[in-house]
Length: 426
Image (cartoon, rainbow, N blue to C red; front, side, top):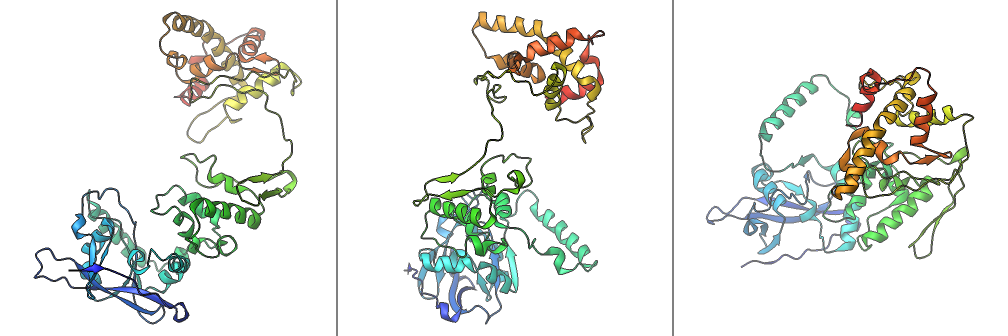
């Protein structure tokens, strides 16, 4: 009968680390369990394998069975482990047999916050000191074995080119904000490890989070990081971890105050509030309806100020915003600036009768929603035609521009530039 395993504390003064030595299974056991023993030794004294893996693999809901998710120690005690770690040890048992192995879930006492904080802080040193690092991606499935074989072939080919070690080193200038940008959305068994797990690869970790501290709550840790990052960097770019994180983003957007002015920021004594001083850049007094939500309403602009000298220049500012001020796009679209304004005005005028008819029918039927009546640019215009800027609505401006053209375009849909633009809305 096995008893619950109890850890013996490490001795930090000796730079001790805890390894597990994997022992052979007892083949006389009808359901042989994983066996091992824990060894304390100074980090620099022995050759060992460090293991990198995910604590949880949600594809392993039933495998391995819970009865196998444990290690029996030669001392007669037993330690429960996760399914993914069990699958790892079962698959790599022959490779690890008799060797010293460092696995964080086993070799760190997860219930001792002080030890856990110390060991996580020095994980960079542990992986650096390891003779080998074993990366576990999960049990084989969907021909993953063939993919790994291909990777091995590519690796053998690369070795013949004699690449330098520096080619594979991490970016030494990657700071914590850049590291978090790529990791903050990843799953973590402990949310604090989204911070602590990147200390070893962040160039400014010592200034922001000198060491892991698992006595902090998740919210306290995140507030501390935000405050330290603001003081260390002299900016508020940590907000980029929350805002503007689209799927196509490849890195944090960098913000800079006008004239290189450092933002004046502070946190209250209880760290419950973030306080920042700012300056007036502009005033937004009107908003169009949200593109992604048909139930939102526009906020009509009250301003009649004209920032451009003529109505033509004001209208040009509108349509140039729709094409992002570009007349050529890398993916093949060609938007001719010299004619696009006329095309836009003509198409908006052509849509008036169609939109009015559909809106009247929608009102009579009292079914569906406004977004159901159209798609693409037609939908945008139907919802923004009454949006007002500089004293006139989009509808009024397009009608005026179209009417003032001595040779108006009658069929904009047949023009190549409009077709390219319209495809961007699909």
